[in-house]
Image 1 (cartoon, helix red, strand yellow):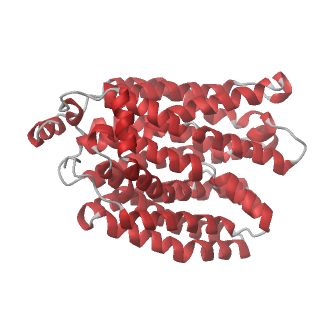
Image 2 (cartoon, rainbow, N blue to C red):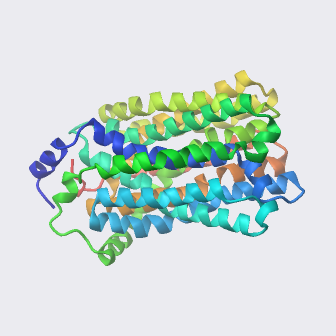
Image 3 (tube, rainbow, N blue to C red):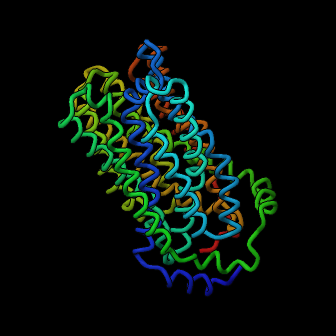
Length: 428
């Protein structure tokens, strides 16, 4: 590993535009996931018609979650590629694969046109996208951590999550406009494809931005980048750090997908208009965008652990009561109040959590280790949050059950925050 002076010189070669270039691809990944989440019911009717609205919705939500099952595999395979060949090449590869998934969902004809091939192609597209997404967030976070000036890691890395919030707002904004311009029937027939086609149109521009990225000084300072076998052995050797990271990320992934991708579906279960649910989602995205860099900077000053403990305790104390209050009298005002509070809890937690995750994974397996930890949390818990929350409501008849699921995730985050230890090999 190179000296601290070598890494400092590497940081000096990067500027704000590198943050924009690297975060733009993360925006595209999350944009597509949000569109799928917002229009899960319409996508279900297009590709999984069963005659039973609940079964159709659950098949669509399970397809949404299926992409996350590929994330751990992508994290190990593509993460090892990144640790071997560099952050820049890894970021370009993940963006290329991601674009395949977006094109597949946008262009595949519906079940009534091509029959069983329609759901098969959609699921395959989601698996390819999940494979690429398994390393995308980790690559972005590691890149930002390695170019951050001394003492500003929390602020820099928070822009990884902040770019996702731009995607939340953009997807919700386009959805709200389409809800005004198109009838519900038109939205179900073809309107849900329009936001996906917008994503396809901007993908080439983001690809050009990423090609201009420079390699990080921290990676260039590695005398001999590890081969695939060494990376995998390193992951096995640091399994405790990976499992701790998975528990840390569980709180983030569950809360994020609950207050963003799941909001329109949850609003529908509460009998709220789609336009109102999308408006709430857009407000949540703006709130997240504000609080993420703020709390990332706060964690630079106060430390990661105090912020994480405070946020998990806040979630445990308020998630279920807040959802019960919303379910007792559903309205736009109540949903906005509850989701903005949960947005503050999520963004405050995540602003500290993501940078801590880069700090507990040793540098030689940082991209693969980060990606594997985060992907396991998403694949097992976070990505299936819309399906799990819907299933819990269906089984119990209690519309506050999403709050119980979030409380369980907060418990995992609290325990992990108490035991997490930064790696001694982590450069400053």
